[in-house]
Amino acid sequence: MIEGLSHITFITKDLARMTQILTGVFDAREVYASGDQQFSLSEEKFFLIGDLWIAVMQGEALPARSYNHIAFKIAEDDFDDYAARIMALGLEMRPPRPRIEGEGRSLYFYDDDNHLFELHTGTLEQRLQHYAQGAKG
Image (tube, rainbow, N blue to C red; front, side, top):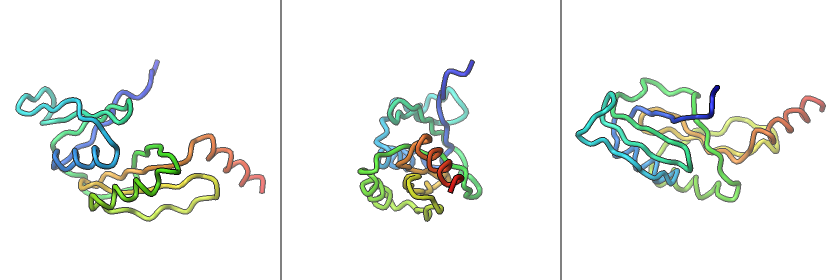
């Protein structure tokens, strides 16, 4: 039986830069750095974002950008603060996709390795409720 999400791994060409992004945007806490001791495929670091384990490993960047992404929940009141954090790190923001009212707002941005991240203010329950209302209208 699946108990939940274990961890998410990102491959990055620059561990120091990814550390800046994870700590600067997500307030991630670094809990491990392999340094010269490699127990996996390459040099790696582990972070916690809340209780979520994020692993980053040294390697080649993704060859292209896509809409594949990971989304993190943020409070509506923190939206502008997170936008400022992303801009301060010089990360490229993607325009938000069209949304129906009440679905929540999103910030989309790419890291230097072509990973797309989303910071979203809504919840699944809110989205389903608004989609159901839209289908009735």
